[in-house]
Length: 258
Image (cartoon, rainbow, N blue to C red):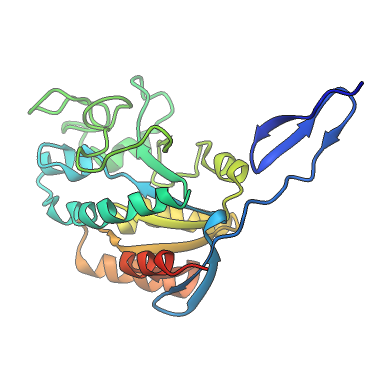
């Protein structure tokens, strides 16, 4: 007698197998179609194929005792996405949209960080750079599992959320992010976090190059860079790499989904 089929892999990218059969049809997820107005077009999209990437909402970038604040950057703009994300994330979880935290989290020995990357953040070699202890609390800058690299307390992470450590501005470079999204069957990506013109933009561009549909959630994204950098980011996303929408439009679209 042939035994019943067992799931092998992560649905929806999973097979059903036993000793004699491999069912590789990969049954699709139940569609959740929404209509989302953006700055340039109205989109029809399927939440069953969507995920949100939240980039670098970490103490070192957003907390007044973090690294950027230590080197004299006003981090108040980086905190602006906190409130809209607090409203958006529970709703996305309720409709099974994966929450992916893409955070800078270095190895303690920095063996995978080149001199050129370290130079960006410590150009003289004398300051507090990647891996160095913050004077206020001794937390090593952006080291994985340190206070410095932790997501800010105001944004609660759930056990089912997905966490990806990155080591460059792009969350796709030298990380498993692309493999994770492919296994989850997610091809439409919402983007949030900081800094919009740096790590968010680099990750969004790479997503576009890899064939993902990209939607920047503008009020859930921010930068401590000058205003013209924010304006250029919005322009380039709309012109070249995807779409720009606001969280209230996404919430309304989910509320009225088919």
